[in-house]
Image 1: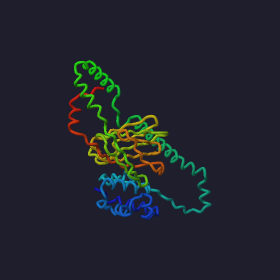
Image 2: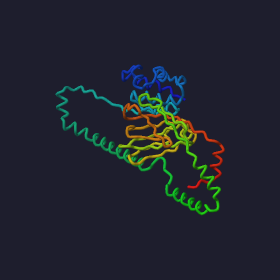
Image 3: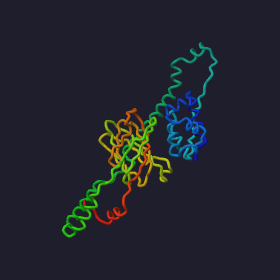
Image 4: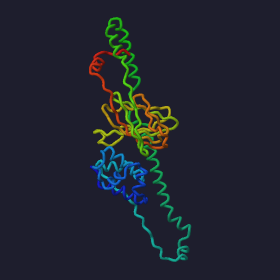
Length: 317
């Protein structure tokens, strides 16, 4: 599953920075034996594939490499070939007097002018393509929210139908009111600990499916929700978007999901809830910037009789 190039690439990057394993352990807050295992591609000795990916990302971030690219390699994808430009050096055998006599400043500028013009044109093309791509991503959200007009219209028709049948179905209405008055379970969100930019949290007594609500406070923040599923080949973000202040976003987690990773860009501008309960991911005020939050879910247990009554009886809105 893992590529043999991961450990060598990380180790070479660490040695180029003259960084010891002890220093790397202090930066990543990852045990030294796991760092050694990564460099030796001994991923089977680690707790599980979920933590292998997290450790690879932390190691890569500390030595200036792209963690997501290395995770792609770990997942079995082909590593993209590096394209290196060949730089040719010309040896000047002439003396300083000959060089200044034959190649004046104006002459050198004239010779290099075409290269400068083509470089500027290429740079302009790259900037335009990047800008158009960025605008397209901003204009088209990854997950389209359901149209609220249709929901409102449906609710109104249900209300009219309920009001017209109230006089003839008082027994059904009272039974429905009793079942619908039962309080929903309250989620219990707990901060377990942190290691560098990695935070561990749990949410218990969660209704299925779980719902996340993200709110930007005084600045924009990029949010990515990573869920390992068969649909994304165990690699990819289930949701990612830059959230602006005044424009909160809700994300419904697929039913039965027990583990996710929430990645935040400017985490100091972000708050979020799990099923309506605040999730405090930085209680120690340990810094600003990116955060990777490992979140586990434990769902609330409900009686089968309660589920069957709620399914068979219509609920008055």
